[in-house]
Each structure stands twice: as C-alpha cells, then as structure tokens.
Length: 415
Image (cartoon, rainbow, N blue to C red; front, side, top):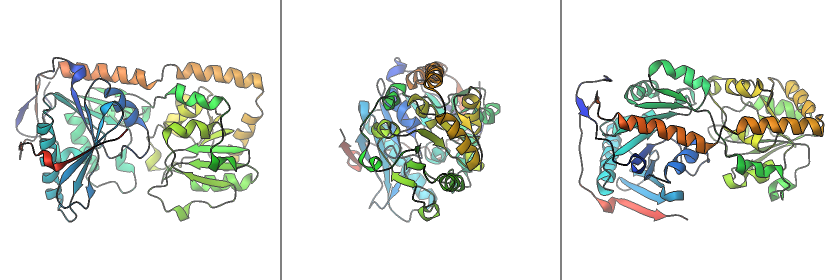
C-alpha cells in the first residue's frame, strides 16, 4: 500500500532477522523522570528485548548542540538534546537532525522502529528510514494549554506516515480511526500487583500521617485539567473531610489553587511510593474539569485506584463513564453535592457489599495488565515490520548523514 504526502520515494529498510532485537527510537514531549506513566510502562518492557532510546524535547543553555545520555531500567537510554539559546526554528531543526543522525551512526543502529508521542518531532526526523513507524497517541495534545499552532498539521502528517497507530483510550480511538486503516485502541492498563499493596495496612508516609481521616485522595499531575472549583466546593461542603493531592503542579498558577485547611498538596512522589499513600485514603477522586483538554483523556489513575481497592468518584469524563461507571465500578458526579452524596454512599457499604465489589474489580482488571498490552502492541509492530518492504512517499529534502562524533555525547549510567 502506498501512502502519499509529498514527492520523493523513500524505500524502507528490509525487515530485521530478529524483530524482537530491533532498536526502538522514541520521540516524546514528556520527561522520563517526571511522572511514571504510559511511556515508562511500555518502553521499559520493550527494553527487555530491544535497545530503546527515549529522546526528550531539547533543553536550552548549552555552548554547542549535543546529547546527554543516561541509562534506566533494562538498559533503556534517556537522551536529552542540549541546544544553545537563541537558535532559530530552522537552526534548531538542523541541529537536532544532525544529532539524531550522529546517534544512529555512532551506535551502529541498522534496522530500527521509530515511536512517536509527539508530532512536533517530525521536522527533524521525517528523513529517517525506519522499518516501521509507530504513533502512540496518548492525549489530544493540540487541546492542551500552550500547544503549538502547528500541532494539528504535524499530527495529520504523522498519522499518514504511521504503519500503526495506538490510542490511549476509546474517545481518542473514535477521533483517529477514520484517518488511518491501522488504528488500535489501548486504554490505560495497570500494574495490579503494585497497587494491590495498598489493600494491606502500611506505614503512613510522614507527610500524610498528620492528616486526619476521612481522607479523599488524588494522585496525578495537577494542571489545567483539574476542576479547582469542584475541589473548593467539596472541601467547603465537608470541612471534616480532608483532600490529599499527590502530584506535581504544572501549567497552572499555584496561587489559583484553593487554599483551605482541609486541602493538602503533598507534591510529586515516586511511583514506588504511591501504594503507601493510597493505603491511607478512604476514597479516591478524579476531579477533572469538563473542558477541551479533558475531552479525550483516559485517566491512568482509574484502574490504579481500583487495583488499590479504593472507591472512585469521578466527574463524567467519557472514558471513565464507560466502562467504569457503566460497570458500577466508579461513581460519577458533576457537582460538589454529587461528590458528597457518592462518597457517603460508598462509606455506607457493608463489608459484604465491599467484598463483592472488590471481586468484580479484580475480574475487570485481570485483562488490563501492561504486560498484556505490551504483548499485543509487539505483535502489531512485528506485523508492520513484516510488511516493511513496501514503498511510501515521504519528504526527503535535506537528508544528511553525519559521521560519528562520539565526543558530542555525555553518557552517564544511573542505577
């Protein structure tokens, strides 16, 4: 099948003799060490059998363009482009294109798969010749605050180029499936064993131990997607309940967040510590605003809360309503009064009712492991690699291959 978006024929590399050993090069807008979420779960699993390079957006302030490279679990390498201040957009693109060419040459990378989380990497990577191109669309980035104007057009091009497209939820799948003949829905999965630790008594973290019960918890990024009026209304309606918010505050002025005695902002915590915090909660919250930035979200926290054994109360985010609300695994409400009613209803459950609910939760989550998602994605990528002899038309202007320049890499190993 031919995919035409511009003039120029670019033959694909032949399939690797061992697809599982193929190098995977990922381009992402997310910092690897920011929040442990979908990219980390998936790519750390691919790193068990493949070389994986996770290339972040550039950091500015270097004297000269270079990559900083550090190792993570299973040898996955995080690559951070370092660029000087003041470069024009075209100069940035040229510098990044040279760096990725040098990385491929210096690491002796032959057959490789490209994996995109951001379409904004296309200008400096569209000349590459992967044996398969993957777009894992985990969010509708064009609707986020501060999104570049070019995001929509770049994504259109990326989907046209992609051999396979994954989406992070049903809403995204329905929005993208008409734009490619190989789109697959992979909603948020869960490491159930990790979060089930919260079901047994654990020592309360020091910064949470001082907070009285009843505790209503949230774990995740606190940004423009948060319904701050709902938080304030809930805290005001029940001053004897305490809201515990675990996660970094980004893209929102902290002074805009409600400041009440029973709202506690504990900051970002390592993924490994989340079960300890959740073990001390009575109910988990998904207090998302209903706006453009949340239209297509599929919160990873929904199955994580459930695996932790926590009742969940959420605003009517579409990918929470179905399937979780429909299956009566989560409560749905819009207003502070709705949340109060739902929380009181959960607290009134008998031990027998709670036990039956937990059995239904575990049955529902049993098919949602990250291992299972990784296996299914791997099969689809292997199929794309098997079809890699096809020819597609892509822009090939300014294709350059630089000689290896190993001195331009700062390599560090992290335990």
